[in-house]
Image (tube, rainbow, N blue to C red; front, side):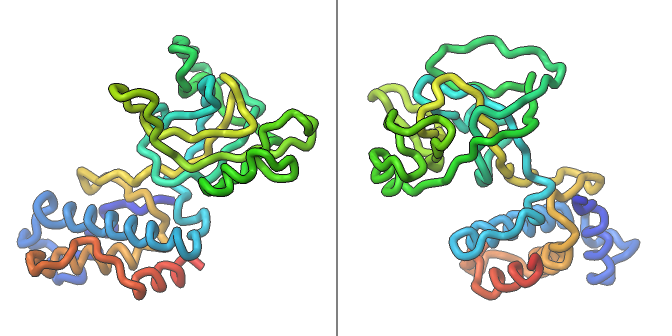
Length: 253
């Protein structure tokens, strides 16, 4: 379950020996310190992604599975997502879906992808492998690798792949948002994208912090540091050290 912001605030006041006092204002001190600690934790997690990806637990309250119709170029635009994307966890091709009861969206230009709020993911048997740009190029002509786009392999053993979001610019005047590309081509077909959104800032203490209780002490300690130590000494607010990364990995393992 997410962390109630009030729990962090109460623990902060207890540590600061400020229960019942008005020395620390909710809007001027407590809430900004909590939001800064969340942004710091986001920076720490980003740093771990290049070393050892944190388990799914850390993203539990941030993860969604949305169904999209791809564009004619087999892409899904990040502009089509309901939330600001933090990290892509999985892309599943030609899923089995069910209806949500929401209205079917109006058909946009066939060249574009779009979110299908009228559908939700049930299951899928076609999974994709995330490739680097180099692998994406090499695998194109290799029938034994995910992302092969030739016709010499049957559908039953076809292996799909996707490329991390890239900004494609087809002209000098139109810049398309970052898009995920899938191969073999899924031309105006359905895909499900499992992704984690960026955590929201809290605006009041009745809001929830979109991280699990396992990182409560990390957020508390950093929020106390932000409220107790004034910035302005030339340091970066969200500086991440190796010790921070190690502490996070120990906390979530």
